[in-house]
Figure 1 (cartoon, rainbow, N blue to C red):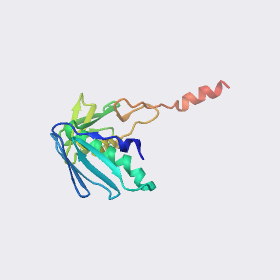
Figure 2 (figure 1 turned 120 degrees about the vertical axis):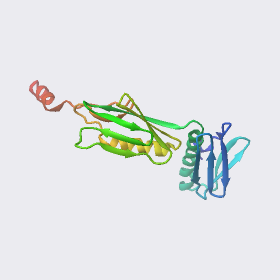
Figure 3 (figure 1 turned 30 degrees about the horizontal axis):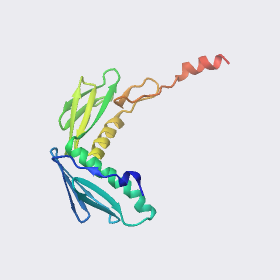
Figure 4 (figure 1 turned 60 degrees about the vertical axis):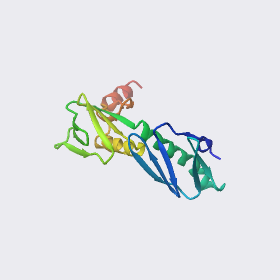
Length: 185
């Protein structure tokens, strides 16, 4: 049995969890999320807590036990508090504009890159170089942030590009650094 899967999920006030067959719905102040639960996993709501139980002891069911519990917990936290992911742009002339549901990136290409937010995702821009992606679905927020980072990932020689806030980019020495270290031998 999964240690994570056995832990009950506390439902905060203002959040409603409904189970109808294999469909799980979580409603809260920020919105509503739905998920299909596998038939091997049983979800029940008792006394303000969500319990995830398994029907058998095969390997697939055991692996889905903790995963299902973590996904439900992320849904509960998303509709009550929401999820955010921050990105930084490093480079001369790199800037972002827009906000809300449209984002325009100028990252050294001959054209600006336009990114439209799907339903439930919003963009916020601070100082033209810091982007915040927010929404209620942790999976969707993370995927959109990864798509933005993929436009111009940080390069290893100067560290220019789009990176997550607080991400450390390990830099390479380059050709000049190799020649100096090679001459010392």
